[in-house]
Image 1 (cartoon, protein in one colour):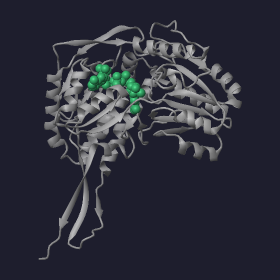
Image 2: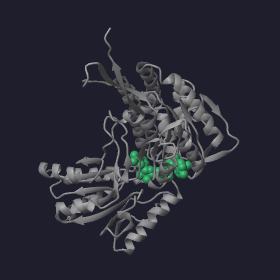
Image 3: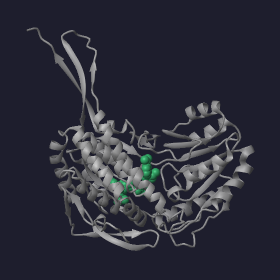
Image 4: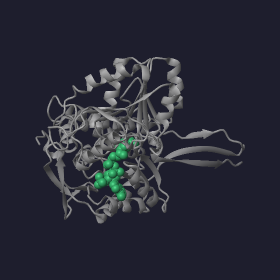
Length: 484
Ligand code: NAP
């Protein structure tokens, strides 16, 4: 891997502003070539305790700094990320697989959270409250909650980190981050740039590890950790939530989704095809907000499916570092096996493969852009995240049918629909049981907007003016006014 700034390739744990080498290492694999990129330090419980203590000590001074001071440091970090965007994109593509253009997009998107919260922290206003008693004055102030544990997934190795770390640091919290085992290098590069920006000792710590369960146990049970922010699967959420209960930690949980993408017969066909593809095939289908089920109204189905097949079959599969690649590899062998399992189940229950369906010639972790039709609610893929480049097409009759099928899931993260009828747009948007709705649009995430789900997709918002609220407490002050 060729980087102009070779310092971005860090291999050790980042604790209290120092690079700490562990006794043990683990392999970081390029999913496109399945070759070894490098080995990184394998952190353990002792390292995690050191990081928590460093973060706790740092909290004492960091939380007392002015918002302006923290804001200026965060802006330096933001700028350094942008200055190194090309290298970071190469690092990201190499360890995660997504096409370079998408990786660059993620770097810029990830950095945007740092800039956004560097501004938001200057507006962490308290309130004065009209008093019900003449001899009292009532007010609130906002204060950082304390040391935060952040646990993040591999599918957005930069943005999932900055979405948590930026509001935490901006508000005055300090952080111990455990990134995903598959993508530790972006996390360490971010730490390197944070150090370069001058973030004080212990404010941001990174533990790379293969011992997720053991480290997770320490983070969720330690009394000095006041908040756990987790993005990942519903299964791991259950463990973390249970472990966090004894010490009553504040939680933010960004979990899986099962996004419906509804194409109504009054949609602009071109916009719908483009939007559905953007939502479905980005990151080879490995996002929590990917269209998992594409619901097409009966009378537009022939026109939609013809245009959709035509567009999907042009998607270029290959190593993300190649210029023309639009779909990279899946993250690992298990991900490929899951896609194959869901396809086999769907076919056995009556689905037909209309396009693709096999491992791609580019290599063992590459999957062909696939479309399956005749899907129904009995199939596993109607309930589980596909997390691969597979469009499952359902056909519906009426608006009420579409809403019923769309809401028939335990998840409630993102939903999409395409329609040019303003009355329908309001009716449908209000009835879909999801935290985020894309209307005539397949890409919806922005630092300025609240990201988060309902139902089994979790709770808490990331980004937007709400994002920083997850890291502060509102303290109420009651001042007695006494006569002289
Ligand atoms: P995952 O298996 O739940 O892993 C997420 C993180 O949790 C990783 O860092 C993982 O470490 C760690 N982890 C695993 N077991 C743990 C344990 N027992 N205790 C503590 N930490 C533990 O999820 P994933 O497969 O990486 O990510 C894909 C999932 O994330 C999908 O369900 C996707 O929808 C969801 N996601 C949600 C959002 C959102 O904003 N709602 C965004 C992106 C992704 P290791 O990597 O070492 O196993």
